[in-house]
Length: 229
Ligand code: DX5
Ligand code: ZN
Image 1 (cartoon, helix red, strand yellow):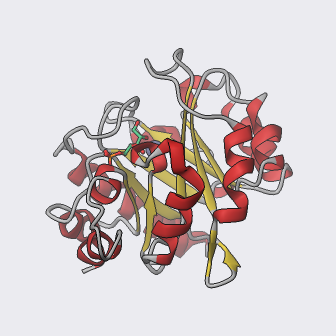
Image 2: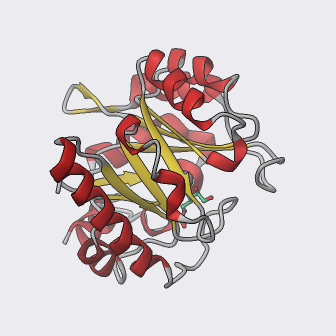
């Protein structure tokens, strides 16, 4: 398994001070920045696009090193946005397979634009979607809420699903030598992250559990430390 990564979802950050929020959460211990893109079509909410991604790039640094911007596209269709987010500085781009007419082609498009491709499975999406494309992916994202909003409760059926995907990824790694990250997104907090990690996840998205816990003195340090522990 790869070293754990914590990716705060800036969906719950203060949008009026987004650059500062990004810089602060990275200084306080975050690894990646999770960037949620919603289109009021695939999901019933509307958020931010490539221009905002480009605007936060100068703030997405940790000890002088650029921190990856992990773009989660909740949009349909997908392909037209891939070049725009690649140009805007995305390190990885993940999408929902139901939202793309040609999943294999979209994965290749992401790779061709120099980004790491990820496939996102909703709580009710079967893991069979991974069968024919696992070798082309760098990350599998399991949604532990229905996409569209921050601050929802973790759906407990996700835990056995994480275990099943972990087995699948381990088998794939043993057969091919190719390792992928297993990311979980939605309702992750200090109370359940241990169980999520024990089930086999190595990459954790948290929005409200980080940005909802700003401390006047220590910023996000306490929230980050309790997730990390
Ligand atoms: C949900 C988004 C998540 C969300 C996480 O559609 O993809 O990234 O912002 O927020 P919390 O951690 O509050 O569930
Ligand atoms: Zn997300």
